[in-house]
Image (cartoon, rainbow, N blue to C red; front, side, top):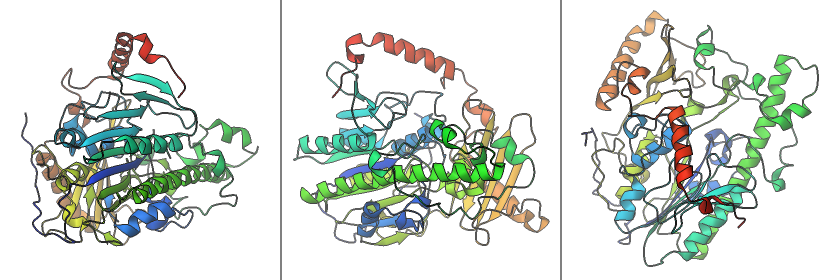
Length: 509
């Protein structure tokens, strides 16, 4: 096994008093939920009272970030505590996730925890290390979704009637009710919402009848052609015609500017309507914990697999290194240890989740994990050597000819853009004075020393995290290490043929 670099923090002080009983863990995650759509993070357009309950009863991280803003790579990093080039999930469709590598559910299961994952998995493999799984087939659908269940004869495909957010909550509560109540448990409750194609539950379809305010940077565009080169797969608000129900309703004769606003209003309202169902269902889980007397000894985490550009810079998507794309919500409540109503401004990364859960569970953190436990940070006792910067890398997908990487410090962000057969492009932002990332300072000679220091920081991180320095092509250089998209599809077809036809027969629950 390769050796990896890891700085492990050992906790020696306790505040409040730590329970001798190992905690339960409920890890709630949504898909594409940016902090701009949560009232506890200051949203002016929607209310999330049940998510706010977690924040008010525990800790809210103001600066939690992903190391890759894309669904599958981020999910793999959360499970393994490693960057995607280490856990090999660099893409959303290019390879299967190896569930037999060290993950926090695997390690907690081996140490006596009951484990379950219910909802969105999206890692192109069958979950490993779980007593129970009931996961959406692929991306899943909002209505009448098909789930893949664990059974004695292997994976079983079954269709469920209803709205996916409600069903995932039903299944989660049902599993908790049937668990062995003498043992601690880990439950991964992962919602599809509010991912594309944003279909709200019927009970929320009339929310937000009035026009929503536009983001401050809605009409901002970066100077030069570089944005068009590296954002070819990022959705622009004025080009967003993928949703049939929106296309049918669009008035004729709108200018490009009017189309942009029209599309934004439809997207944002449906997006928020989906979030309303998530908030309602999170409340059901919190109520269940209260009713069962589990609240004080259960760690409840709410987060998202990546951020979401919600019209900022005219974009609707993720992947970019802009703040709205890489920043994610992170709420954690654990009354036995975490003081209520605190905020953390320190940098927390998705690779920190796995070591933190292991730390809470009194399980040794593998040296292979590149993240560190944030347990002290969550108690308001930030270690003196806590990180003051972090490294980001987006590896591109489908064409694999584009890559984005860079570093963010407290005040600065340096972004590198690579497009095959094109000159590299850089952006430099002073976040202290330009929080919206409007003014690119890269060509200002006054900041040449800052660029030099940040370039050196990039190289230092790439050496520490054992990342290839010869750009994207090196990640895919060795045949067999990663499965290409055509090969992946062939493998899926082969796997499906091997599974007994009986197990794939859809049956309504």
